[in-house]
Structure formats: C-alpha cells, structure tokens
Amino acid sequence: MNTPIVAQVVEQLRDLPSELQWRVLEFTRALAVSAPRGVPGHQLLSFAGTIPSDDLQVIRQAIQAGCEQVDANEW
Image 1: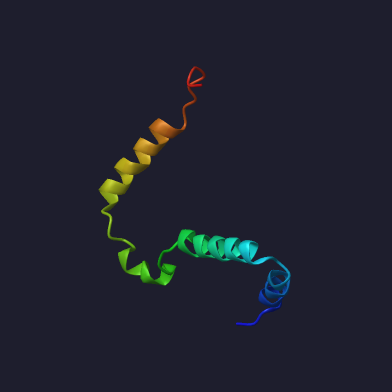
Image 2: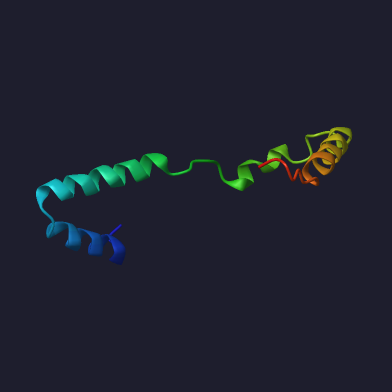
C-alpha cells in the first residue's frame, strides 16, 4: 500500500523529532479507531420490504406532522 500520499507522509515523518513522530503515530491510531464502521448496502437488501405498508404510512404521517413545523420560540 505504498501510495504517493503514504510516501509523502513517511518522508515528512523522517524529518520530525522522535516526540513528534510518536504524536503522529498516536493521531493515526486515533483516526483508525474513530473511522465509521458499517456494512455494505448490498448486505442490507434482504431487509427491503420487511416493514408492513400500514406501519410505513404511520411513520410517514408522523414525520409530516412533526417535521414540517417551525417553532419560532425554540431557540
């Protein structure tokens, strides 16, 4: 996985003092942990159509009733 970006980061990293290199390592580890995780959409297709249409209508009405109003005193 030696992409141009990785090569550039490594090149810059070599010039940093050891303390800053550790900070970069900690930062990259934190980024890897915080990356969103999920499943590909094709794995969710088996759930398509599983919500009964009556329930969908109730959900649709609740969204329209609750989301299309502005409360000027809210803030």
